[in-house]
Length: 267
Image (tube, rainbow, N blue to C red):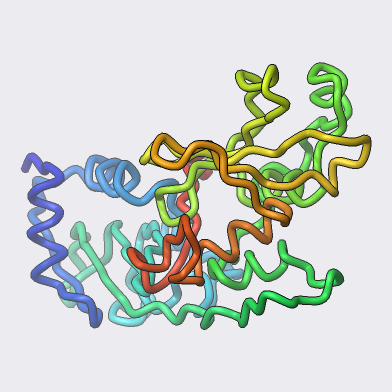
């Protein structure tokens, strides 16, 4: 049985947003379906492998996908996508036959924390970003050699940006805002370092003025608006565009819930 992204879309539409599962043809290669979902949603988490459920799996990591099958899951991979869990793998049916399955379950997403314009400077914007995206995975790149990277770039880098890279790794917020794993230096002659970009070709930068990178302001270089400065740091900027529908570069108009699509391959 050969699947395409169009076939996957049709199956997910049949399942609907509320939560359900479908047994699929025994001719289906479960790995092929998993690859299609990974192309769409990023790297999965492994809930069940060879019949053994990861003991760390709970409601915040997709356990709702396993509920219809009790202890009959043989393999199960999961993706967090907005207010849904999407899973695929193999389970034993009532007759004990191992069958491929596609599952959707409701995902509880933390409500957006208040983002007031007069926030105290002591707010931990990275912690807020973790809560806002419902991020529950371990740090993806905890061992980045920042000393080597900063030596090569010739500058120290903002601490909240380094925490973002260490925590989230390779991927994009809402599958849209791509986080650079090292700043691009292509605008250095303009005093800008690029730390993220979007599908609309907006470049999220710092104006690298002064010796303290934690005080560098964000500048958006936009094809439509030129250079637009913001008096805030990177993590705060991401939080604000995720939840504030009035922000000039808001993503809140397009997504009701927020997540980070990780592109790295999980074990």
